Image 1 (cartoon, rainbow, N blue to C red):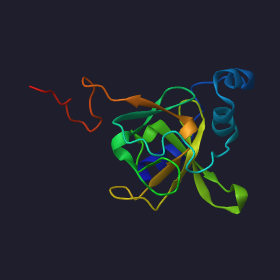
Image 2 (cartoon, one colour):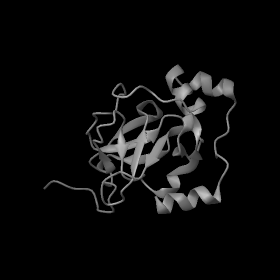
Image 3 (cartoon, rainbow, N blue to C red):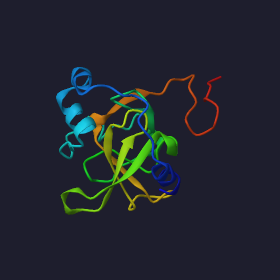
Length: 158
């Protein structure tokens, strides 16, 4: 969490500012509760818990790319889990001491939408577990012409 933590300490205002009424019109009721009111969807009910397709997970509020499918793993918690964001600046981390717990909230840097929480019990290479609500995400399947997200050129057949 070191790189993303540096982003938290600097702090920032969300790039996308909308009225509460506008967010309510654009999001489903569940997305609004999670993204704008920091609620949590029930475990094992989200659309992307068992998604193993190649691609990117975007913010359902603003479309910003947040996580790559190759950073997703099965944590057994009931929420999509990732060991790192697509880049540290994609998310913002904040202390969350609600519900008598000490946690670190994960928000979309671009729109400020609540995504979930990050914990230090994830797999290598980072040891982090970004535990993210499915309804705060939109999945973008990989295309043959797109970079695989690992710095390598697209795989071509031939």
